[in-house]
Length: 271
Image (cartoon, rainbow, N blue to C red):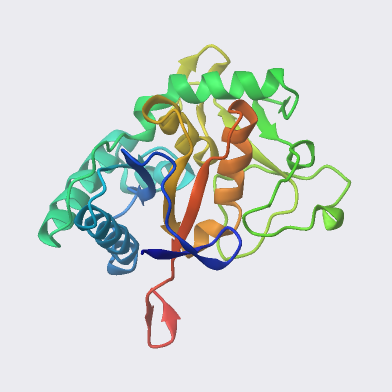
């Protein structure tokens, strides 16, 4: 009998897959604006060992991982290196796959890049706008957490303490493990010939990091995931953002089990 520590509820639970014939697992992948370090790899190794044990136990497993190759940090790093976002992320993607192979990790069943799924991100944003949980402000689109019932249920946010005034956070992510108590960005509007932008049904721009996981999952999985994996820092903001987005367009929970790997510390400091 396998028991897993489910971050959703913060307790050990006996593992029971959503679909007994195929265990669907998804993992937040690397942001390939830079080379992945050993601390990043720790999360991917824990997910790899989990999959191996499930297969050893007799389960058929299908797992995916998204590669974040379009975000604020990729744009900033490409500008710093005087290259294009695609050249930068292609290089780091190749390095990532080479190093996961060197660590003996199994290749994922699907490993899409966020840049390959812009049209699906746009379709999700259009649905969120239509349902009134997202809105335009200037050239950007934002999600209003107060309009999603149960927002913050993974982390355990008390929405009674959420500010009533509108505050918008326009970056893809923010450093540290704290909450940005306001509306988060879904779509970055672009002007001119800025790198890393697309012409789409909602204008020229790019999807934020927050909507990219959902844009992948809608293509590969049409049921609740059995397990969603990620790093501990994703428990702050990002995974509750994911839940709010996907559960606003799908009538069932995003995942049954949530598992978060803790950071690797060196000399008392997070790597």
